[in-house]
Length: 83
Image (cartoon, rainbow, N blue to C red; front, top):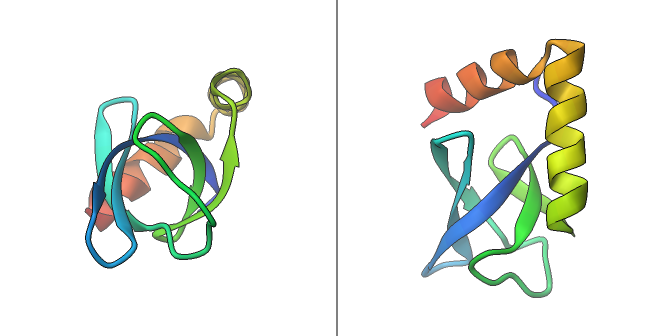
């Protein structure tokens, strides 16, 4: 389905890249579209790009809604396949 999914930034890398994780799935993503990103920030990830920063509460709420709607598992599978 390819929805944007909230993930926590675990590491910053050279070249405006970062490692973001959600539910134990880690993915290397571009943070070039954001002004500032720090380890521990939550970002919306879509097709390998961090699009927007959001609060931890907003990330948790969004992940819970995605799980309730039955789309979280599919999105995590897509992230695994793209890693």
